[in-house]
Length: 575
Image 1 (cartoon, one colour):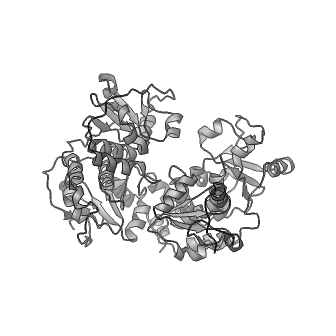
Image 2 (cartoon, helix red, strand yellow):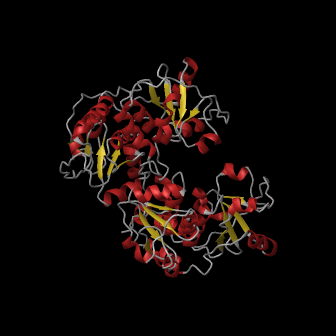
Image 3 (cartoon, one colour):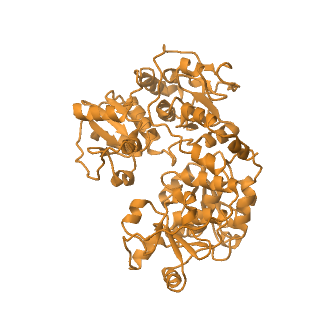
């Protein structure tokens, strides 16, 4: 049975991200670890043999310090539970707002007065966080904010709460935002144990793309099918009312007292009522060295709504035996010479002069509004499959982005959907402007076109990939980051042709040429990070998209690729 949903399922399930804080009343501490009762949900409790926790005996003080925070979490779970409550706090007190999103997100708009400290840099900027007045942290949808709250709580900050609704909830309530940047104050940093600070900073500074999130109901199903262990960190009474099948209950306040119940040799996924407590727990366990931990932000509420909201016809589509891997293989095998690339600015200007070409700019709206190639229609990459009616099939189409990487993924997605008239412009906007070609801010009218016939399962798989693309676009962006990933044990796949590979390759990369990639997915591990590269990044972007559509969510691409590696003077391996 295919694990891919129909397009309707994608739209029903992908956006089930509950923004309010987790509910639940107080329960006594030191609650027992229990499995879901059959009266609530049919549950097969996994047999998890106690394993040695990754915290060495000499570091038990670190465990105790984390437990001091986790076991004393107050009622309300340190959450500002609504937009109105945040507005009341802002009006009534001298509070500090911390926006832990990436700088680019903050620059596009934020809550007035908020200071930007991206989550991965939080421990390096403690002097921007006061201890003598209320502090509220927020992000895009609450997940990162809860990890920030947990990190600061472990470091001894007792004045911090998070705003689970975060920026998305704030803007959906039509509250004002700004691009003005306030002056960041500096404050005395409280006394923090060196080992504790190092552990929390080690977690924060190395957070992977995707923020350790299993973001959709379908991805949770895939994780559990692959053997992931589910841990429900809600209170015993909540768990008794219903739980996700197979989950083990370890209430958040007792989590550190029950580390022997958490395996280290397989993926563990945490959930709660709506994601807030799960993210707090994720940060605590990751800081203690449990790098196999992920969280499921939709949590129980999202899961339950998904189970109740799937119509019969969609459930039938979910049982389809359509083979996504075979369809991807067919698309990859047919890629022609030139790799569907418009290879230079001159080649694109010639196309624009001599053909009725349609230009699609797949950058974010804010990037497009700052300037774009004349005539280009904006379809941000994550929305591509939802805007296929803006893409013609009867004339040339060229997609571009900022530097080519997103364009390559867009090309790959459209190619897998059967669009045979699409190419990418790898030089993209950066190359166009570097060549002093004209740009505009004028927005052309977007025409609409008939959709080609697309296999529903394929559309669902491509749509799931696109709408869930993580921040950073699944890119290992710099040579230094590539080196760090290799040092951490990343598995490298060189998707160039055999003749190119024979002249030298990076590290211990294996060679799986792009056109035959889907035929050799059995050589690609799923339990570690996989990085694909080519010569200059274009084929790597195509491969990255194809592998994600086939379910390999652990894959990233190295856009600088082989040329960037050698240009940096780094060594290569010869066969």
